[in-house]
Image (cartoon, rainbow, N blue to C red; front, side, top):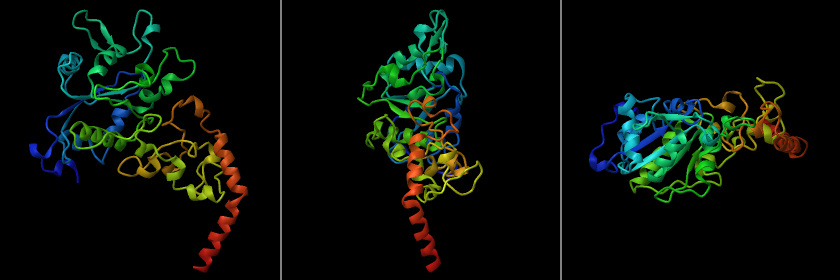
Length: 332
């Protein structure tokens, strides 16, 4: 049911005082994750803002791309948080972290002005000020999580993921490690679901999210793209598409990285369960993985491990499985 048709929750239904989400879009990025999040449906952004789940506190999302406030009025909450005046908040970084030590006299990325000097405050300085006070830190999108496109070989900024900047063993004041939520951009419902779970955890109404070895929510990234793909049956039978647009066959020969990339988009879709790269005939380019994009380029070239697996299936049990299924269909 749309959030606009849900009765507003009472104070007894929620997890107490609102949780602030301080969302910095001032890493090196494109704001694509902020835009993607507006397409979330399960739960929706409106659901989070209103706290429409038992035990969950309402959320106040401070995002410069989506905010009505601007200028000093918008920046006030960030300065309060940096001064330790905000009781509980989730710090979200969108975009990779530039190495300001090699920026010369300028800044690679900055956010707001220092009231004392009227000089831009670099994104790195904001992270240094806010992260120690945050209850949870969320690296949103592949750029923030692992460096992404701005961190490609040869980049001049020294771009890196948030874990590289703060350190792999970093934890928040609550002892929570950095939560990485990759995607280029991130899947919309993955954003709101993760914020919902974090909000419930901060309210004492739910456990902390289980993370995998790359700091990603294990429930969302525990399967490969191929394991959730609608074309997986073709792969196990050894049938492979040869040209883009083929309606039959696994896409691994066309460059799909599905056998080696962890992502739930084939199962979850994109907007309201519809869409997503392999669901509409596109290949997976591995955008949720560390070392994307360098490790997965050129995108249209088959991954050698995935191709080896495909060839093994094609010339071993694939033909046998195909014949057995055809026989079963005829008998039925």
